[in-house]
Each structure stands twice: as structure tokens, then as C-alpha cells.
Length: 408
Image 1 (tube, rainbow, N blue to C red):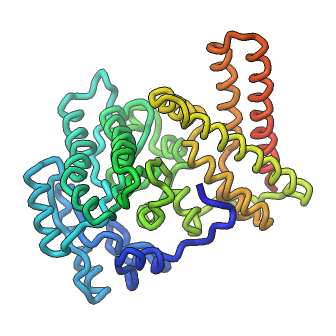
Image 2: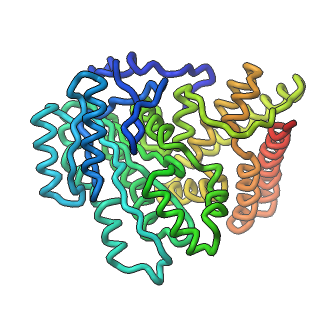
Image 3: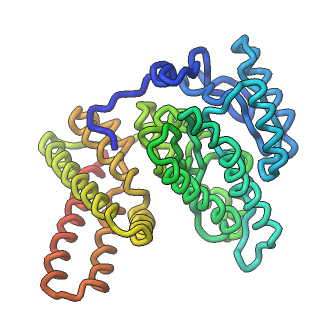
């Protein structure tokens, strides 16, 4: 993962390396087609694939507006059914006839059927499979061979993991994560990269409809359910910028699952922050926090390295267990700690507050790890020594959380 002196990326420089034109491109709001002022990310894909029902006109209007503003025919809107092999073949012919090749695929098409597993109808599960999993597989089968031939390409899956009543949707979206990792493992050291991104809760029309349905299923009001997800909300514009930035930085994310906020921070872009409380730290506390942060990162890095040497299925289970109990993937925690060290070095407490994640979650994982260890380490002396070590890791995370949570 990136070093502590990383700078904001230069889109023109990064894309010129691959012969992809970036200049004069902007980011547009998905619903209105209006340009978002000041956003440096857009224009990554010159052919767009939408799985839409009644939104064909919106797609065409947005493409026309963008092309009109740019003064060039850079955007091509094509309505298609990504679950259909024959439609994918037709899509490929249209794109290749106009653009000669495909450099980037972002699997952002989705349907979101909801409901309890015991009550949801099989038709919903089938539709979710068709769009949320079969579609990305068909696109991979169609376009990856040519990407490998050119030794360049980026294949992005859009993953998601939820809670109760989201089974028909989340099961297939979670599978996209494993699809991305499987493809990456098969790509080896080629110039083609695959990874997954979880944008967070993005208030699109599909998401807003889902919140209304979930609120009823949870027995809560719309506002109450939205409050539950407040820490995960990412604007439509920020999510779009994150997708674009992730493609630029693809080599940093090979085989990983990343979050939109993580990408934006790594790209040096500002995030909206509605917390008007100031973080306060003395110079002594800054030095202490930096020391704890370096120690926490070193511990997690070494632990992850040790996990990577485990047998495949054991490693996968360990990584899933970590993410479940620590709140996000190992790579995301390492990135967060990297950024915290940078901002502590710079005494930039506003930026530190922006990238900070609740370290009590990391402390909770180490508490969970102690219980796990008790169940499989039988040698009493070995168990006692290891528990002391894990408790020290827990203490570091808890102390760091305490220092970084001071507000006024």
C-alpha cells in the first residue's frame, strides 16, 4: 500500500501513459447531465453501457448534453441488456466499430430486489443474478481476451454487503467481489487489472426506492433508516469521481475491495464533512498518536503478511472475519493508517478528522481475536504469551482512538 509521502494524482499524466485522452473532460450529474464544477474526473469510458428500463431518453439526453458542451462526439449512449449473451455481442460490435477497443469496464448496472429470504420470490433472485452477476461475467468473457492481447485494461466490479432483508440483492453483489478477485488471480502479472469498489450508500433513484422499502421491513421511518447509514452516505458526484479515480489508480488496487471514500482520499480529493466540531490535540498528543499509528500499522501489516502465507481457504476466511469484526478490509485500514500518519506529520488536524475511522472497531477485532485464539491454541504457555501480545495490539488501537476522538 502507498507510502507516507503520496501526493494527489495528476490525471493527465496518468492517462497519457496509456494513450488515453483526458483533457477537456468533466464530471456530470447522473440524473440531470449537468456538469459538476471543479471535478477533475470524467471521460474515462468512451462507450457507456446502461441496463435501464424507462431511462433511455435520460441517457441519450445526457450524452447529447455532454457532447454539445465538449464540442466533440466523445460519448456514446447504448441501451442494452447485459444479462443477454446476444445483446452483449451486439454491444461489442457497436463499440468496437466506433472506438476500436475497450480499455475500461465498470460494472455499475444493477437491480435491487429486497425482502426476507423466506418471503422473497425466486423471480427476484433470478433477476438479481441475471443483472448483478451474470452480466459482469458475460462482459468479462467478451472483453477480457482483447484486453489481454493489448496487455492493458481495467475491469471494475461494484460490490456491496448489507444486512437483513437485502439478500436477493446483496448476495449477488457480494459475489462480484469474489469475481473481481478470481479474475485478478487469473490475470497474473499482465497489464490488465481487476478489483472491486464499494461506493457506499449513494442516493440514486434505485437506492432511494430501496431505503423506502427497507424502512417498512425494519419497522422504521425513512429518516430513522437513513440515520443508520449516515456514515456511509456518498453523494452521486463523489461516487462518480471515486470510480474515475479508482481507474486512474488501478495499479494500487489490484485484486482488492476498496471504498469510494478511500479512493477519494488517496487521490487527494476533498470529501464533504458536516461535522463542524474541531479536533484538538496538543503537540505531545500528536507525537503520541503518530507513534501509536505507526505501531498499529506495523502490527496490521505484519499480521496481513502472515495471513497471506496461510492456505487459500484459511486465508480467505481470516480476511472475511477481519472485515466483519473490524468494519472494513485490511487494505482499507492500512490506507487509513497511512493517511493518518501523513496528516499527523503535517499537523493537519482538519484532514486527520476527515480520514479518521473509529479505531474502537479495530480494538474490537483484537478482542474477538483473543476469543478465537482460546478455542484453537491448546498449549497454555503459548496461549498466554499470544494473548498478552494481542491485548497490547488492542490497547494501542484503543489509546489511538481515545486521542483522535477529542473534540470541542
